[in-house]
Image (cartoon, rainbow, N blue to C red; front, side, top):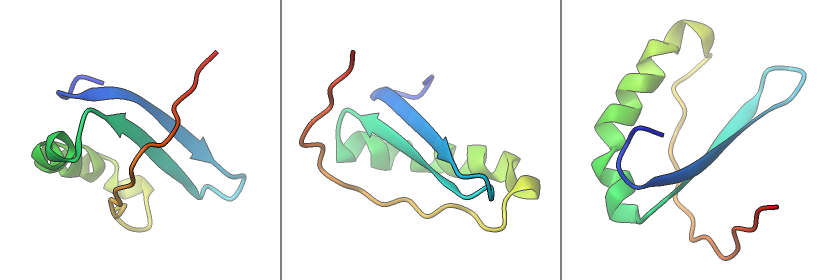
Length: 66
C-alpha cells in the first residue's frame, strides 16, 4: 500500500497454497511505474514460491465495497 497509486489489494489462497494477488491501482501507467519495486518485493518471498508471479493487467469495470 506504500506505492504510489495503489487503492487496494486482495490476496486469495487455496488450501494447496495456490492463489492470486489482485491490486487496484490508479492507472496502467502507475502500475508500470511500480513494476521494479513490485519485482523487488516478490524477490523477498522467492524462497516461499515455486515461481515469480507474472503480472497481468485488466480494466476495472466494478469495484464495490461494503
